[in-house]
Length: 270
Image (cartoon, rainbow, N blue to C red; front, side):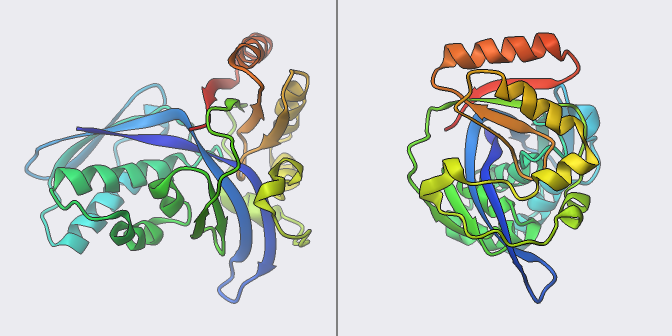
């Protein structure tokens, strides 16, 4: 039994007022892609996780969100936390693609079936929210407008499913905390999901200050025939949208050749 954990892309991210709990309200537009990690499960006496795949070394087999999700679901359901999990890791870590959150959401969906719980998503949502602000969105999938801390989710229809997208990361990990700390605290206004093409990512300048190579990635993508270029989340991954697969793949080939040390993933929005 397997479950995919799709990479999440922030088409836009607007930061707003500071809340009493120390967080900032934000408004963001999430989409998910065909590019994903894969989580598999088999019967076992206890709970264990093995990480394989090209980016396994960045995760390791120790305690992570997948195991935390498994234990949380077992505790909520009153069942033994018994499963042998295998995570095939392809999404870069600390890359602004929600990889860890997507893996946790995949664990909830997978073990919900494997343990015969068959809970509706609404019953899994409180568990997902306790694991991290992005996990509920990853649990739901689709195109979603997020507000509050990102946990207030509203599905939206903006007609992007099937759009070719190119993900590029300069192989520099950019932790979310320092990027948020570097934000200038200026509220530049709300995000209208219908006007997402003219929206922004309010964390881009702070991320570039920490990892200037992000500017190089954005510049390289801007030289292609992209219809939109922007940074995703807190970085360092950037993305570009294209009118067709041929144009996207040509851009991927050019950037991969010109920058062999960068991670390049041509995919599509689902």
